[in-house]
Length: 108
Image 1 (cartoon, rainbow, N blue to C red):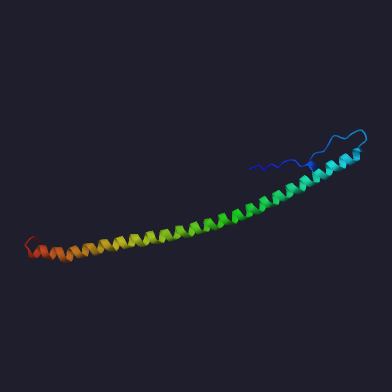
Image 2 (tube, rainbow, N blue to C red; image 1 turned 60 degrees about the vertical axis):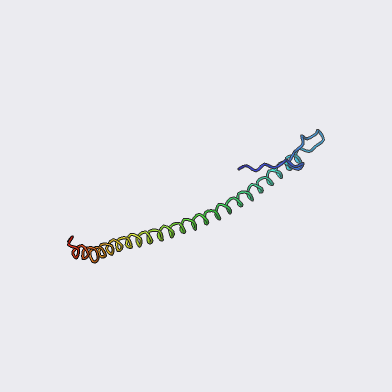
């Protein structure tokens, strides 16, 4: 994700004329390089801050996901236990009511 900016007039160094002192041009170039370095440093700090925030959000999301997974396992176990009890109750109802009816009707 590159951010491009239009070159401002201050960032363009004109070619020195014969009357221009080369020290002034060199100092101007160094000043522009320093400005670019400071801008890059600010951009890097913003990127690091954003990366830190995103890392913290990711960590929090992973923790929530682990909690939800634990809850899902808990309810899955409860559902399995309830199914076992329903099977036991179903078998008890069949044995208690239907086998007695079959015995009374002579089917037993």
